[in-house]
Length: 81
Image (cartoon, rainbow, N blue to C red):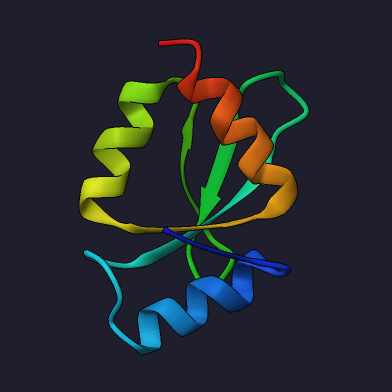
């Protein structure tokens, strides 16, 4: 997982440099509490997650790229195991 000021930039760089597993995905917050929406570098919807298990599974097959504001939401989801 890499973080930065712009998750799309992080996703693109991660994919170009072949960091991690599979395609790079970037997260954005959903209006729904505790839900993250994951898009690919072309800004196409891939999946949404709302629990630590889903995040763990997704992280094993994709490079997850997040910005600082989304990091707080990832921590909240992780802490609700």
